[in-house]
Image (tube, rainbow, N blue to C red; front, side):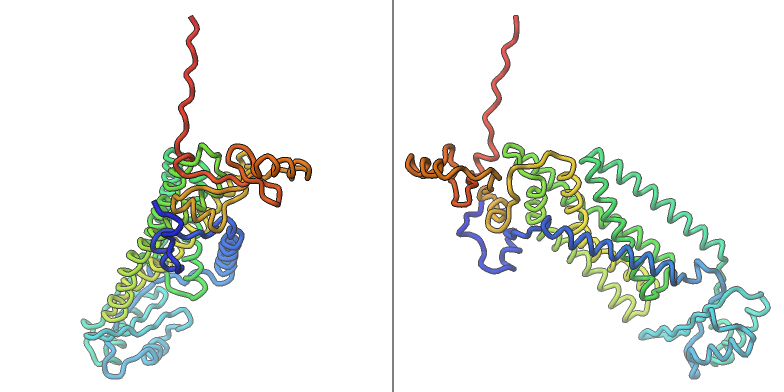
Length: 395
């Protein structure tokens, strides 16, 4: 158990040792406002410009042409125009790695004869053979099937999560967890629609993976909240205080988990996509990276404050003031709980009478100049309660 003199002097030291005293509940408005802004921006961007869907969802033909003999995206546009294909809806990009360099050309669906002519034209322009030019065709119906299956899997996943959390914890925690997961998905989709990143099947898989990661971090917080709820039941601790104590206790664990999870994803982006030129890894890792960063934010500033707000609005109002500053730090490290009971200021003559009789209130309460008695109780007294007397059986 940490004593007050064991508290680290620096902020990073207190964070590392689990001695922070951050009032997450007090800053809940800022976190929830930021989440609402993200939802609004995502919705407006989706309505105005939509998602940049890849070939697998829109359907069409694609060629991977070796970037040899001076063949580049401008040369690919010339080939399309010479064969009467509009470049308005086409996507042309150059992909390079240490071993190969390709120009990827994606167009809307054309006839098989036109596709064969384009294959020969690309081979001639790049100075390669038709066997070296990779061709693929995707029907738009396949993309619709993938979308429907992804939505179906998402609905089933959310339903199972809601039932599990309601049984394991309570329904208010299920609502907060679902809100945090919805925030993470909307934030990731917003990044893709605002910056016009291409959405592929790998991106959809990453979206579903984000939900599992977001849920894990939220469950860790809720498990500590439930544990502390039982520990402080004897003093009727306000639920916002329980949430604040729990968040400060698990914050370092959440940071360590997030950092250890993000590092491999960053490696996929830098090594797999950047150095090796693996396009599929980039599409998967980018969505995963954005979702993980959003998951850390949502579990701290969305799920936990929303849970405290729901519990505070449905439960009985507490007469204790919320713990802040060193009082909150003492509860976090387990050195004790200090709080103030909100009472009316006693008359001046009673203050003087109390001072004359010994200068304090009964039962270990010290009357402050402000009029509210301050309660100082060690954690051993708070967490241990005398057993209730057994009722006598009637004969």
